Image 1: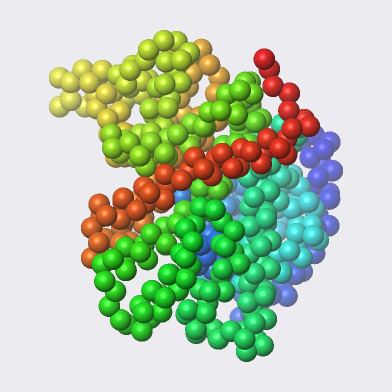
Image 2 (image 1 turned 45 degrees about the vertical axis):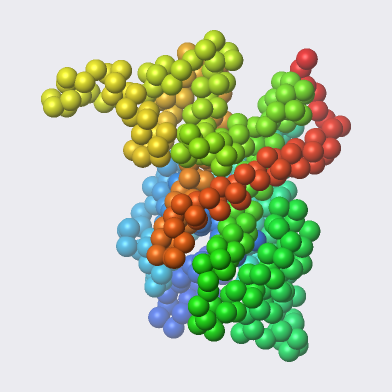
Length: 444
């Protein structure tokens, strides 16, 4: 362990002792401590856990322990049942002591992670009933990591983080104001239409949400709450508004991230200013091109075109040859390796039998070797992002499966919403370039 890590552990001891005492004070009448996850249904700021599930990072809270165990190669001596109970029915103080002891062994900058400013913001978020608290913690945790500081003057995440922090601040202020209005009797908590109207301030200046959407949603939600039947046209109107609001956060986040990447790593100012990013192109291709079945299929098309630009015309069969295929089972021996690779590639384009993280990494590494390029983690992240959008689309289609509208009608609405992504991208590119102008130094 180096000197920096040793100092970090000493600094952590002070923070963790106070943290331990604070946890003891939260114990219930049975001397059990429970970590409560506050999750609020929200279009404007969805729960962090939903975002993590979509990108396949952490599907449940106890996986946080596994993440830190793997990252810092320090096992936590706590049973799987206790890890689960910590976020459900609670654990005893002995288990809490084990967790605190384990945290003392990890050279993570806890003093920065649990700083007073963050705790104040988190408490304010909890008081409001917002999802912002976990987002604040996640952003702060990432900023405390060595990865974030590896290239402080060229960080692709800054635009994304600024966007999320602004959303968090706005959401907390909005919800605290709503609580004041309810307390003052100006707004009734069960008044469905008034609750929707109260959201005007969040969406009225959003150029991507059609005018009248919130008003229409309020009226239709009121009819639904009164158990009145909606016509097929009314249902489609409701779904369209619903999808505009659902996808807005994700389209903003995706394009803020992609713009940040292109500004940080782009070598041609002209290309950055005049060409859409690969993620944006991939999602837009799914939304507008009938031959593209999924956003991931759109990304594979983008990769094919990028490689062709570097080494000459490259087809899908060539791309398929970079897939690592396990040794054939006896009944598959008659099928050539080339055909097995191509069939798997066709499945990927259809959105089935998708690659694991390991298989995707090998495929992209082989692609880099062929193109004599070094895309690092960027192409992997781009693929994971479009696959997450596909997962979100599939979830929304599944949720509406029993409605009177057909799945084709629902998907047409989703595609209509997603086809706005170039507008999101261009607006965020303009803002990003203006913000970065003093420090940009593109190669010729």
